[in-house]
Image (cartoon, rainbow, N blue to C red; front, side, top):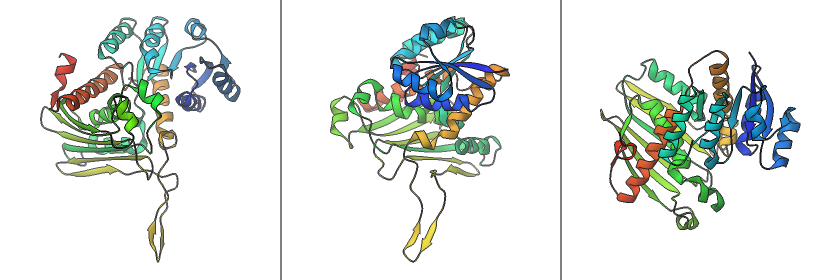
Length: 335
């Protein structure tokens, strides 16, 4: 079976997914839609697909699935539309910035028996998957503590900060999903601290650029997350999982993995400069998993519920910062 795709959004992440779709022999990119016509035309020219409107893709009989890469405030509406249209849906995170809106959207998706996958690409990074495999194989015993370091090379522009939903919903949300992926238990409490250390403008816009979070499960397992919008040395992405019988870690990756030793000491090449190059394999693997779910009936993961859970942790972290206390996740979910 060849899975026929419509791509909604031809911006930075849309280009990444276009490459992943066209690089898979089981898939075909049929059409692309974007409010910015030149961006859509560029993808159409590069990959030999058509430029269509969202409405045309919605009604199309020659499209089985869509990849949603449009602005966040359009995600939930588009998921509902394409669920009702009978298309399989891959949507970049988050589904929405409101927990209530996400819940309503997932209800529509479930009522229409839609296949819905949320784009937490880091689950598909080969290095992070190897960490999970070591856990599943019992090589480090029972997971006790997880440490996640995730720091960007630089802060996004103010225009992006205004619509991002804030550092916890935009950046840390990936780490919240990864914590759930590795801990093996749902998180019960969130304790967060956040500051403005990088750019005062971020603070004036009501956001933070530096954050630390402690997550604790009901049994006491812990995860510590360190975030910064400024890592002068590159895109800092590390994970360590400590267990009852050992430890497994994934180190930072570099475009070239060499080490040079001279009388001046040891040197290594710089880190990747951002997610576009660091997670190329992960983006391809997540689209491959989505294709397998459609073509072969494989289970979808991450699901819409995973997206909801990560957003709930984001809300709990923000409440923790504002009130200076540990927050039970049930306080924000109402469960």
